[in-house]
Image (cartoon, rainbow, N blue to C red; front, side, top):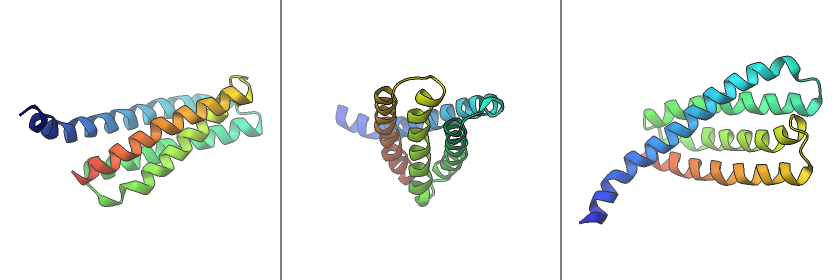
Length: 127
């Protein structure tokens, strides 16, 4: 019977995981973006902050859609994931001074994590 218990718990765990990641990215992204708005003196920094604000907005939209069990949560989640991945890749280069290889690695890790969240979020919205 353990598999039955896991099957019952999995949707709630998936929902909690998605909401936690999205909420943390929205709050952290908003706080960081508002601090960064004053210091974005290069083009890449401006693009990074714009991508950050994009994932904040679409993360919040995705949270609302998931909580209301809306079926059309896929595209806001994908937009959140792309913006978060762009931010991860650009920020390490534009703000941190890391090399291109580190920035690409950061973007690849972010893409993997956000893909997991998109998958889990779509399934969480289905119930």
